[in-house]
Image (cartoon, rainbow, N blue to C red):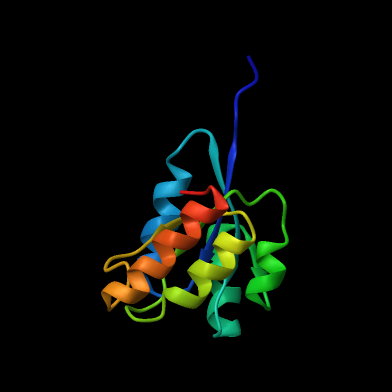
Length: 119
């Protein structure tokens, strides 16, 4: 049986993103492929440190077919848009807590994931 590898992308280049990158590096069948942040110099530094590609736009990162899972590491209250875009691109999402700041925004993410058949 062929071993399945999982490609990861990270949205947000703050402190918590580094923890995600280190955790991904510890998983034998996982690889960090890319980072996107609105702060391009910060994402470039992150990419250099974690040996991945920095993308100028979220859409560019989401277009990479090797990325299966997107870690949303943006500040609380800024998870909805990148989560919905990732889900619409067919990517599974791992979203930092809290999921979002209102029940309605949480439900929007959950409903979108159910419709798209991703986790």
